[in-house]
Amino acid sequence: MHLQAQTVTNQFAPSVFPLKPTPKSRFAIPNACRFRRVSYRALKCSVATISESAPTELRNVKPFPAEVSRTIMELSSVGTLCSLSQEGWPLGVGVRFAVDQDGTPLLSLHDSLPESIDRRSSLHVQLEQCGLRTPQCTIQGSIGKPDNKMILKRLHTTWKKRFGEDINEDLLYIVTVERILQIDDFGEVGVWVNSSDYKNASPDPLRNCAEKLVDEINTNNAEDVYRFCNIYSDLNLQFTEARLIWVDRLGFDMRVFSPQNGTFEFRIPFPREVTDEKGAKSTFNGMSQQAWEVERNFQAPDFERVKQFKMIKPLHSSSVE
Image (tube, rainbow, N blue to C red; front, side, top):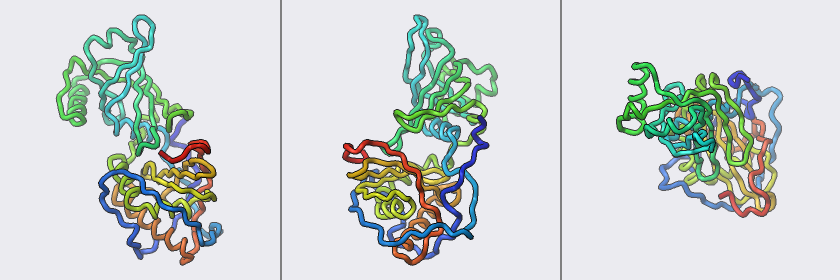
């Protein structure tokens, strides 16, 4: 399956955001990623359906698994290398790694380790997102030594850029990627990605600022977060906690807790793709302004509300933590 060829219908129709800003939608630098509890307030506006004359656009609303895998590998530097020992037992050891421009992992291993395990191995890597979700990928491939001096020189540069130190050439190994299993969180079903899609995919352009943006929004824009859940989703339940989990070039993921119904996760797409931190902030502010005006009946919504939700925790859970 060629993942890059897939498309799904966008949850939003393109719209022009009002220019008038609201004081509550501006960003400020937070001290830490902490959750602020806000009482639920019932939505007072009527929600209209999308206009038949509104323009529509076909595009994906979340990154493909190959992109997610590349992003996880770019943001992480430690993982678990797993293989079979000479005795036939599965063996997993923690390793540091960096990735080159194609996403190929390079490792620094003890000189005796490759001799004691099967060269067919897997590298398991996890990325914690705001303490609520842990997307992960497992790369299956073969451990080997780079056989080209130009490649070896480039790998030295890659390692030093990641860790700020030189790597012992005798301890440097690479994992030739065969396929990747990408999983969104613990306990969920994964998606297999072939090596070609993985190498051709690009890591998310917001990856280096995503955690900061999430911290900033959750800390300083809690009212906007709750308003987004009310205006841009069709959740139709009372919730007492809401929080952003992650943001990428196509939108952001939300998690809410309802005392009567449990914990849910859903995605709110951006009306258009963003490519940098400035664009993400500008888009968030525009969506905040639009949601504020719809909430007060100053304008009718010209978007389709999110209707797909995933239950994360059963009813006896007490929070989104």
